[in-house]
Image (cartoon, rainbow, N blue to C red):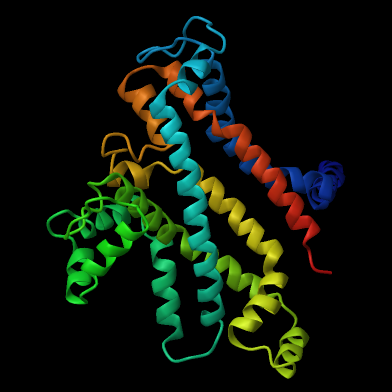
Length: 324
């Protein structure tokens, strides 16, 4: 028994030293994430690329090879072009709202005041709530007959002013009170943009607050001595120092927005008259509802090269903007 224990002791020591080695421990720790990404993202992506070059239809996961026909047919479709344009507008507009809102809120939430934890909880709540549940609540808030938003605007006597403003900037002709937020094309596009920005705002606020906590206290003291307060401090001190982490927040926001499906589908289903279709919902309509899996896969892949370029560009600028 003693001889057997002596033989096993070096083996156990070797395993212990192996697990403490970075070469062994690092791959073991990252392996579950890699396997998850390969199964959940990699396999569907490769399968979608294959289907985009075939004439596969619903009920079958294979088809005849047709080359680039699905891509060319989609490009010449007016609905696809409208969906692509809406995706770009939807993404850029919502990210502009998110970045500005996160910069202002993070500047306010890092201060000490009574009830600070309640405000932080309310800010984070939209991100923590299930996207379907929160979007259904917005569907009720923007209802054509019982809209809480319209009722609030009417009580504040802002409904007619808002109609005049929308007409003044030529966003909506013939707008009437109460506003049909989900029944008119331009108003529906504004509605889904605001709702999605509201969904992503807490995520960006948390990232901006983390970025602000990394600013050295010496910089804060120097800005106070120089008289930089309020918006001047935010513009000239905080934002430049938070630029790398802000670019990361914008990167994640662009990716989340460009591939978003739930908000648009629940609020408008791409309507009215396909006016709020974005690429994910249009790919679903063509590939699943109409049964043209090949063409739907091709539509879903149109944004892939653009997102790759955006990701590489954002990471490059984030690295260049790092503060030493």
